[in-house]
Image 1 (cartoon, protein in one colour):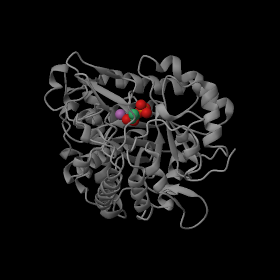
Image 2: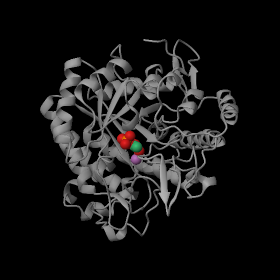
Image 3: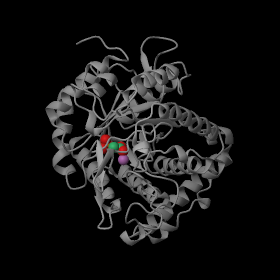
Length: 445
Ligand code: PEP
Ligand code: CO
């Protein structure tokens, strides 16, 4: 093995990277980024790793969620508040249902880069670079907007810092009302086939919180302060390298631009640049695993990324699709068991279930998402392994991007409030409904 360094990824082929016209301009931006303060600390990252270790053995549960693609213009108070709120409310449902601590991780404060199926896009005979996320270029189909601009990396850093600053302030206690389920917007509960069960859970959560209030000893401040961590796909490697710093105390290199970076399904080849970069950072890391994964390659990948078999280091975020999980997941579970690697198995029931409607909307059926969740719990139960977490694309507002759910969204509703510019997200009600469902699955297994 050649020695690792923050830039050793450059010796390997790197997929999905922007092509910058002017390397000097890029280097100038990276030099500036390298001197900016980190966004998170190594001790926060180590605390998260300890909690993920608990989730991998079933003593905690990881709830990871947020936009597919954060946009610079959504760095405003309301979307941030709503996202944090839905994740906190979901986490209370999960804590209550599963009777274990929930680790809250947002796809937030840095989720600005997207892998694309094609590097270019052609419209009416003209071809331009694909949109690769706000840290690279812009959506409008013009040569100027689609050109990769190094300066956008500085804006991504600034928006990440602004978002995280507000999240930290809110997590310190700005959300007392999450303790009153009677104020949550849960109209779907009544319309659900499981209305009685869900009503009972809502009452139970309210009772539990009132009980804690009444017995005293626990102050409001203890209760309203929550741990909240950030994550994003660490895709644009020059940016990630600039955020890679030595720990203030102790050894090792950390990506201090986020707590929990992950490798996408398209960039997890063991001989390529992303795996080279990730092998040297001390953060807990995620890897997306889709239908193309094979048992042998997965074992080699784990050997490379976690040679010491540290518990809490590796999260496998599985995203096969409801129709593929039954054949794809069992051989991978067996390979990981055979290799003896400790991993946190997380379910991403979103990315394998994306379809395009006749009108051209990218959407996902709520039922397919639920099927993949249920099937995943069942398969792990059969193998004696544990579902340690879930990874969702969601937002706190009433968008109409995914079809179905007790609220009854149909394909004709999609046009009403379709806001995502990449993948379709669960709206507030759909996200809460999934939380109730997972709470039920987690309790039964
Ligand atoms: C994503 O999480 O938005 C994504 C692109 O996922 P995957 O790498 O699993 O396709
Ligand atoms: Co996505």
